[in-house]
Length: 150
View 1: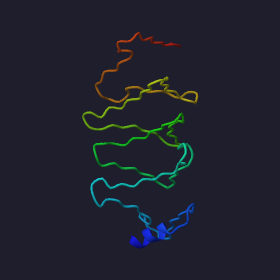
View 2 (view 1 turned 90 degrees about the vertical axis):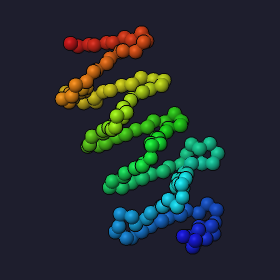
View 3 (view 1 turned 120 degrees about the horizontal axis):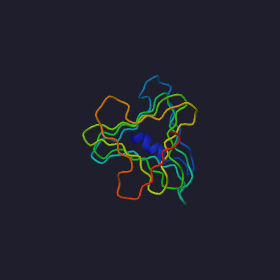
View 4 (view 1 turned 45 degrees about the horizontal axis):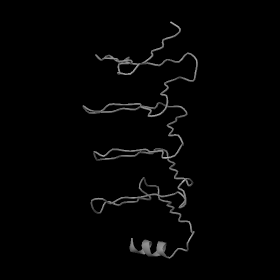
């Protein structure tokens, strides 16, 4: 690792670094920072002026992110951009486990919309064989509940 540090330190300013492996191994290129508590890997790809440009792109047959602590995983969009989860031909599942594993969909300043973009599709709420309570408009605010086309 010391040789790599020396080589990187001698790169001219503005140079690109390309790590390429021809090894057919799932760990062909590995960034490992587990030497001590608090070790980490930071990927910084934004401009130094206003932090609004630059791209971090991850491509793979499978991309998996694991967090093994109680601090969780945060995905934050700090500007006015959107956070999108998209699939061209698969499901998107949000699953929470454990006794306090709630799934909340919340908007602090806008609407929350659950919709299908294709005719004859169904929105299902509470269709598994479990005893449950389904609450609609149970807050203390002045809610309006609109049910149409019955």
